[in-house]
Length: 297
Picture 1 (spheres, rainbow, N blue to C red):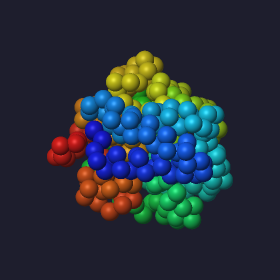
Picture 2: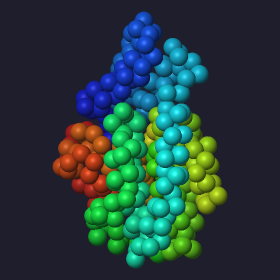
Picture 3: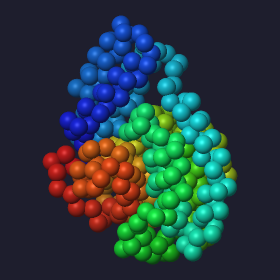
Picture 4: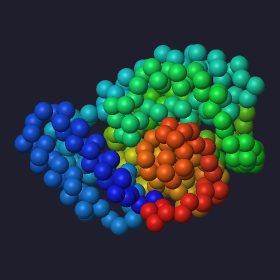
């Protein structure tokens, strides 16, 4: 899903905000020139997440050793871990724990300091989490998902952001209980990329105690198939089902033709237009059922 003019505007504004936070106008000027050059140099056809490591390389050139998202990631994990007992109780009390855990994983995709930047609101997140079971799930997609899981041997669950990975943990627990025959691997990023999950983040919330972890071999905050590492490629090729979290994974995987189920919130204008839904609408859709006509699809 190639990036478009809307993506360029969003990506560049985000980098300008990061630069403004440093309070060094001269460095910011040169950094933003490098950002714009990275956009111009991007290969034809790549999705927006491809640009993120390029921007970070430029950022490190002027502010070396700085990870502007490190503290946000720790705070997000702490926020969600503090609520884990109550959220787990919700899942376990549910008549359908997989559905409830899936709804939690969906709304937790709100914890996105890339797409939403400073607009991530803790009070709103709290409300969304504890009313997650009110969010509708497409019944046809969910039924097909359960049918596919019954007949599958291997599931690749590709994570997105720190913090929301605690909700992923609840969904993994529910899936392992309901489908004990299923071998599940959890996919993360190969290094720091926005507030996306890495091996270290996954371990911090105990995901490595549940399932094997595989990283994508890059710092691209998505699953750009031309750039992922050999280990992730092999797991992806072997998977009977892929469960993909977040917009960036959707952007980089859609139209790949694999048996992929996508979970995300629509958090930018491009996605709300693509699906013709309001901002922060939750989506649970299947690759093989997606039919969208756009020159940038």
